[in-house]
Image (cartoon, rainbow, N blue to C red):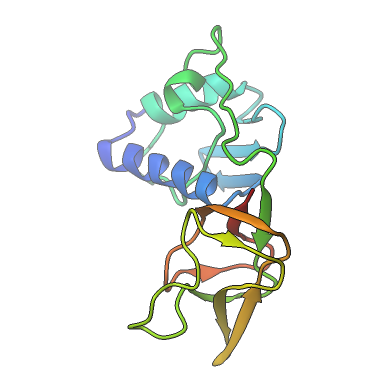
Length: 176
């Protein structure tokens, strides 16, 4: 087997962080020499590449796979790569947003946390919000759509950055 180069390993780590940050529950990637399938949301991640388990898959991706093609897209797992590489000692990551209400994007567009480029953000981590409070704008087809909170509480996390594209149903804010 070919050794995964530093760039490929870094791309894999970036993919993991991207999926974690965006709350993506399922990921699949297929290349002629590799097939990866991951599922999240409360269950242990499942990785399949010709029938091997998640720990073996992580070890394979980090230590052995690559074959010159590089990793096509980032993938996230709810366990660290180091923990996944040691299946005899499974690690369980605590969900820091357990019990939080997740405000999701109702549309596809571009996320903006301010009403104007030089204005203060609508909300930031630590702010208290009530139902109906404007949290951000999602621009879609040159229309600025105000996204309101559908829960009252404190903003504990902002999942996206200004100018980042967002998908329908993507996590924007965690409110506790």
